Amino acid sequence: MNGTLLGDKVAFITGAGRGIGAAAARLFAREGAKVLLAARTEAQLKAVTDEIREAGGVADYVVCDLADPAAVRAAVDRAVELHGRLDVAFNNAATNAPPGPMDQTTEADFDHVYAVNLKAPWLAMVAEITAIRATAGTGAIVNNSSVGSLMANPELPAYGAMKRGVNSLTASAAATYGPEGIRVNAIAPGTTLTEMVLDWDQASPGVIDRLNAGTPLGRAADPAEVAEAAAWLLSDRASYVTGTVLRVDGGMLS
Image (cartoon, rainbow, N blue to C red; front, top):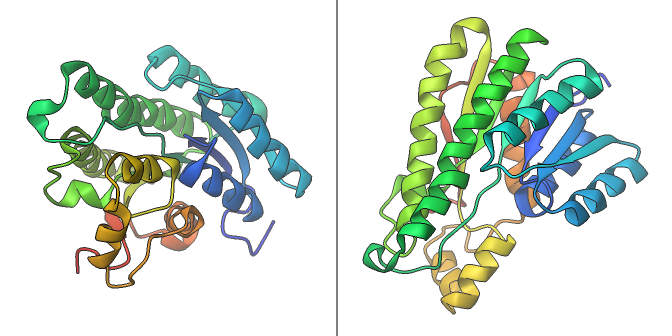
């Protein structure tokens, strides 16, 4: 599909059943990509996959617990089984712990946030780079970080720490695999109307209004707006961009 942002690319997307991941899956398919959606909840994956297919796109899904290394590798390999190669990947899946200061964060919650938000992107990147290298040869990866990775995070300390770790992995991967023509970037969304943020607002009433008050654009993002940034970074139009963390935050850190 010439003239589209991701024409004929094979794209793997984690956390694709809802929020930014689902918006990305829809957008990437509209922009010409063949998409493979991965997440834990089959009903959500099937709904998004069916929606994309009904709109004329090419989509499949794989149920995957991103905390399971073998499952992550199998999910990436599925893209190659289906389409013969992997070109691009969006590592979007994330989890959170109940908001509160770090001395009130349980060790179990910290370990869970680590497993999903930092270890899983590392596992996914290793599998994706292996697949890209063996098939398409060159490609691009985008990791979903957070504007919270670029500042203190007193209410979500584990989340912020893991997302800052994602930024470091992104930079390291960009430096390591750039010579092979594999670009690796991250996006750092600000307040975005996902289930995770809405859950945070429910646990801490007024948090979205407070965040919007500190955002020059004065509002939260729709998940589709964040997906646009990921699509561009994965596309050939961003061919000289690697190792960057692109803020998609309405100016929050301006």
